[in-house]
Structures are given as C-alpha cells and as structure tokens.
Image 1 (cartoon, rainbow, N blue to C red):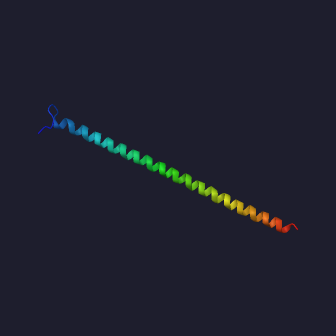
Image 2 (image 1 turned 90 degrees about the vertical axis):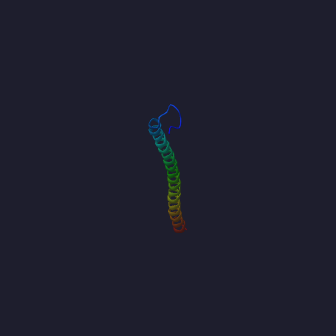
Image 3 (image 1 turned 120 degrees about the horizontal axis):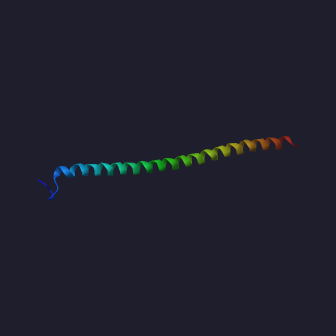
Length: 74
C-alpha cells in the first residue's frame, strides 16, 4: 500500500501535485517569454521594412522634383 516506509500516501500526493503544477506553470511562462521575444523580433523587422518604404517613397518624390527642375532649366 505504501511505496516508501515512513511516508504516508496522503502526505506525499498533494506536495507532488503542487510541484507538478509549478513546473507546468514555469514551462508555460518560459514558452510565453520565447513567443514574446519572437513577436518583438518580428515587429522590429516590420518597422525596418516600413522605414525603408518611407525612405524609398521620399527618394522617389525628391527624384521626380529634381527631374522636373532639371527639365525646366535650359
């Protein structure tokens, strides 16, 4: 009935359940932090792409303005 001498069954089970629950919560927390890190990395890449797009559009507008100035001056 008892697996180890000196330990009663009802004394061990709640403690083991609590340890298992704490371990599962710790694993879930670690995975949540990893997912948050990945989301942050993706947001940084997206922000970089957005700025490259903005700079590209500004360069195009400036290029067209310069081209029209060059065409207007003989």
